[in-house]
View 1 (tube, rainbow, N blue to C red):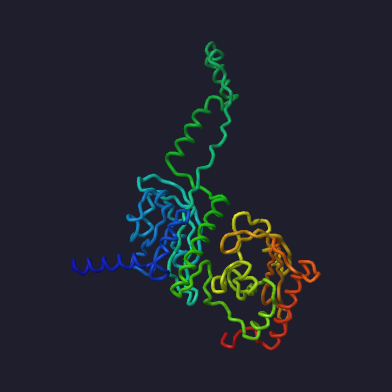
View 2 (view 1 turned 135 degrees about the horizontal axis):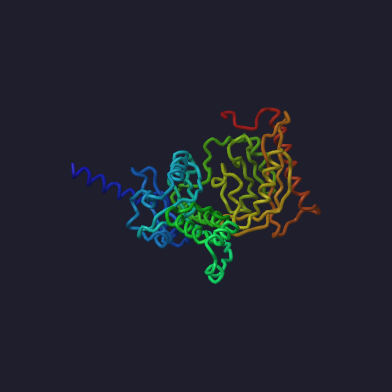
Amino acid sequence: MEEETAASDEESRRRVASSLTSRYSDWVVESLDELQGSFLLTDPSIPGHPIVYASRGLAALTGYPPAEVLGRNARLFQGAGTDRAAVAGVRDAVRCQRPHQTPILNYRRDGAAHWVLLHLAPVFHAADGAVLHFLAVQVPIPPPPPPARCRVARPTVVVFAPCREEARVEEELSCPCASHAGEVFVDVDKRGLDAEEPRVASEHEKEKALSTANSIFSALNRYSKLTGLVVCGKRCDSVGIPALSSSLNLSLGRIKQSFVLTDPHLPDMPIIYASDAFLSLTGYSREEILGCNCKFLNGPGTSAEVLEEINQHICSEQACTVHLLNYRKDRSSFRDLLHISPIRNASGKVAFHVWVHLDEGAKHDFNGLTPEVWQLGAVGAVRVAVRSLSASGSLLRPSQ
């Protein structure tokens, strides 16, 4: 029995050690070691869903050296004060294989509690949609500044010393804050010691978590190609994404502008077609972005107000043109002149949305047209292709 247990433990250690190198390459660990941030990778295919990689930033944040966390479940960072609802949300995201962000109270190796923004994301096999790993990024959430205390001026001792008891009571009734202010401050301090107040992550922490995750996915994708395996995240698997017909693909391929088509009838409006010019603009491969929501281009400085404007126009089935700060795969930014328009089929129903992207900082030859008119030309070409083929029912592959 002991021999079987020892053999099982040895097999688990072997699988943990080879979890990354067997699926990506022998150099992936060295590449991940160079990245900034506190993060780890887990492998759901190994019993116990253990940690198979821990960054140097994680060791600095938690006090756990990598050797102490590899092979263990990530629950080792939780403790008595960790909110059960937050843990349940993480478990649900893992079970549903979807990204998730939540503030959570974790514990360092020395037992000290600290708040982090946990950014969880599955790593998918682009070909079949299988989950290979889960990425967990931890961004510290600093404590909020102490609230301003409104101190009420107390009468001096000289005033109360000669007063009769009745006068002192009357003074307290007329200004109760004066005599109980000290008690209020003590109570607040005690509450802070008795219970760890929940913290809310700022936009800065959220953007930092997303930026770190994007850098990690970029490294994993780059080294996965060396083994013939392409990975992606944030719903980037193509499972469940409708395949366009060869006729529509051929028609769209003749359009030289940078654009993508999204399907508004599927959850999260995934990309179902991307032009070669769009791939050239952003640096992503087609396998990396099919099935993704267009928000993977966003990053630090992307306007939340503009994104909300886009959502409103999409919901109302209206076209819009906006200026947006977006990011390429290498995380270099570009000023994006973005035009979004609904594309209706022959029956008048919205079949897709077309997103035409234009790098405002690059030189373009628009043949005497304005950038906006040039973008409308792409919209018109997509609209003609969709309407002509939808009349014959050949937008999707027959097997679909």
